[in-house]
Image (cartoon, rainbow, N blue to C red):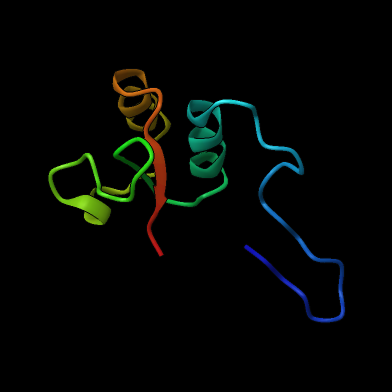
Amino acid sequence: MLVSHHEAIVWPLPRNLPGTLTHAATAYAAAGLPVFPCVPGGKHPLTTHGYRDASTDLARVRRWWRRTPEANIGIAT
């Protein structure tokens, strides 16, 4: 959650994301941002229902990226 009512900005993600897409996807999910895997180098979802499958469930996110470690990260907004 990004908050700024003349207070310090609260940013839920680490300043430096980990070096792999798998670690970055789990960092986003852990911060509460629902993610889903996309075709490597593209934007087409790899899941059946696309952005509707987005999840913050760390076990699910890890499973997706274990299957396709080079998958791009989609973030449902």
